[in-house]
Structures are given as structure tokens and as C-alpha cells.
Image 1 (cartoon, one colour):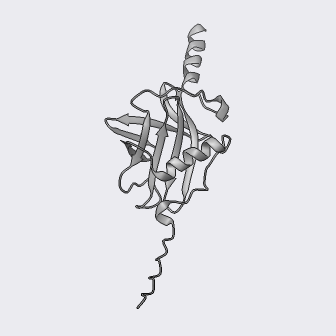
Image 2 (cartoon, rainbow, N blue to C red; image 1 turned 135 degrees about the horizontal axis):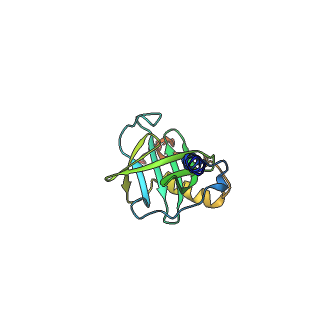
Image 3 (tube, rainbow, N blue to C red; image 1 turned 135 degrees about the vertical axis):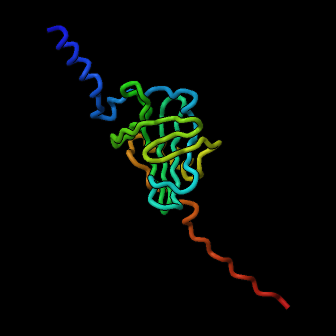
Length: 159
């Protein structure tokens, strides 16, 4: 009888899931995960060859998944341990594993490399997260590459 109870308990340990964002315990990030991660080149996990994906992971375990193409979509979240593996849980309750392989981070069908600083748009998204601490998605940032550039009119020459 004890063997059956033990087997049942072991079977249940692999089935842990997160039903509410508040359930996920924010875990401090190990040094090798901390920082700014960004895609390089076209990736099948992005909507366009010109789209870019970024993931920001703070030492405290806060995260920001920032995607940009024709608009910026940034989703705040937190790093947590689930079944002994690091995952990112965003406020929309999407749970995505993080797998570090050499100098590359595999995340949500993306391969990211560490960079020194986030894009301007992701920096702006970080500022918006601070202003909107309960927002599940930040979408009010226009990408730099989509801003209209108007040519200045040449000035008339004076004789």
C-alpha cells in the first residue's frame, strides 16, 4: 500500500502547473540568465524576417518579452522555477521554458544572444511597465523604423 501511495505522489510532482500569475514565485536569476537577450537575423518564431525579439531578465527575476516589427508588443513577467527548470511566466499566464545552450538562449521558438543594452523601444517599454505595474501588455510604443520621416523643404535662395 505504501508503494502505491509513493508512486502516486511521484507521478503528481511532474504535473505542477500555474493557474494564477500570483502563484508563480519570482525567482532571482542566475548570473548566466541575467541581462538583455535579442534575436539576430530572421527567425521562424517571428512574424516577419524584419521583426525582432528581445527578452530582458533582471537579477531580481523580473522579465520583459519585447517583440517589435510594425508595432511593439511587450509582456512583463517573472522568472520562476517549475519542475527544477527556469521558465518565464508572463502576466497573461503564458509559461515558456528558458534553455541556455552555450551563449544562446532558446525561448518561445526563438534563439537569442546576449547584448549590451536593449533596443530603444524595449527601454521605453521598461519605463511603461514602471508606470503601469498591473498592465499585462504594453502596446503604446511606436517602433523607430516605422516613424514617418518628412523631407524638409529647401529654403529659397535670396539673390
